[in-house]
Length: 71
Ligand SMILES: [Zn+2]
Image (cartoon, rainbow, N blue to C red):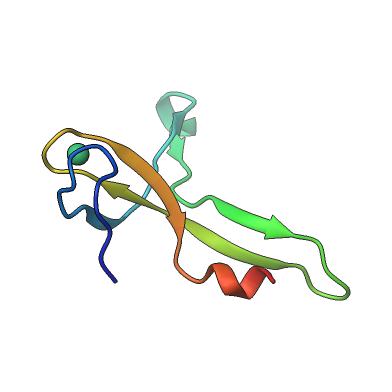
């Protein structure tokens, strides 16, 4: 799969993750995985959010790899 930057048409770096730091000292932690979730009958479905980054302008775009799974 390829993804072009919507600003400068450059091929984006795929499969990056978003990282958020919280706490301090021994409680310092990060949660690298976010997901899109949709309530369905039985088990819900969720897809991890991946991040694409443009190496030229730095534009950051979230996406999911298998959006059809949420149908
Ligand atoms: Zn760009």
